[in-house]
Length: 210
Figure 1: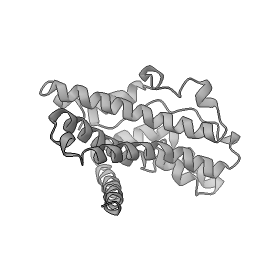
Figure 2: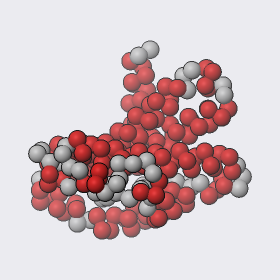
Figure 3: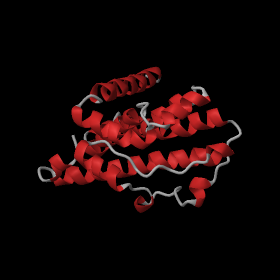
Figure 4: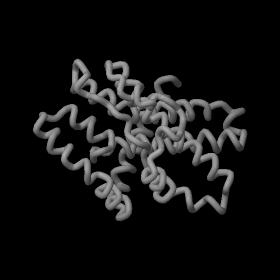
């Protein structure tokens, strides 16, 4: 469910969640560009995309989807994969970076919520819980292997070049496929499964340090 439903009933929560979503999506994209930069591709840097300024990243349709259905995206960071010495590993690393960033943000938020003085503060609790939940949802959503989501590029890194080309051909229709699956609810079980896997991994991680 999107944010529109809580705009009038709870404007404070709306503002907090909107800001959290905005910067969660921005950090997701910056992570792609930063990892590409580490692999020797400066396209994102020269395009002014390694910044936290919202206007450099916001996509009108992706932002609208965030408010309407709770899932969305920013403008994809431009990456020149041909400049990588190891194209497959570079493709995998850049694609995974965005989801990994969202999961890391969620882990930090959940870690902070373990402190009683934070968990008992109503404002901090709402903000950190929103940070954790939203970033897990974004990470789970982007792991779905449908172009142009990151999951499709992670999958591509393991496929033959011919199979990669076939999957890439779906990218112009990816938005329509995703919109159809979201509005019909067919994508919900997949997102739920991805979320459960991420929550499980985070739970295992915290269990190791208890």
